[in-house]
Length: 224
Ligand code: CA
Image 1 (tube, rainbow, N blue to C red):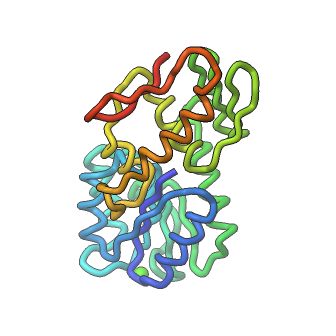
Image 2 (image 1 turned 90 degrees about the vertical axis):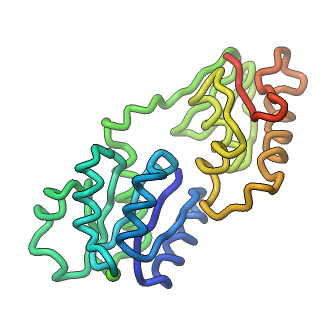
Image 3 (image 1 turned 180 degrees about the vertical axis):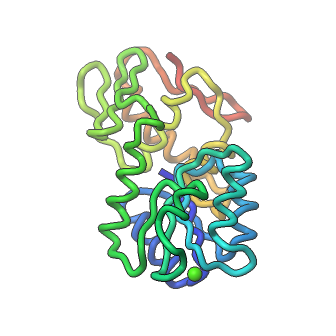
């Protein structure tokens, strides 16, 4: 998953980011309400969830939330409030947030809320992705080719999941980077090529028909 953190206390933003990365997610943060709104409006497709503080410089978190919903953007929003920021949770939910968490909170609590939000049926993402003899289970995080389990690293798994959610579609390096890596990641690095090479070795080598294709000068595609 890729998560946008909106929090003006940079120390807190950094520590949430670090925690999320430890759990295998990618995360970016912005420090004020205005940048948050711009980032969400332009890049909402890159993120699975927004963690939004309410008391923010430049634009209040609730206003950001309301503006996002008025633009019909359905990205899940988890609000962080300090006690006294809002009268009650109804107000937060009324403005379009999906859930809220009162500061101070433990990281475990934050992760539990995130998991709960991601489980919401509105997401309706299939648990098992299948492509010819390749199967990926998003809940057990296991991958099989020809019935044999394949061990992937976290990044390889996320990369494969992303490719399998877009079968037969050529995905550019930029698309892959923006979906799986941090916003500021150096797009000239060959990190994707390295992960693709390793992934290909694991899923395609010695397994019959090759599924993972390189489209030279464009990107990658998984064939179904
Ligand atoms: Ca704040």
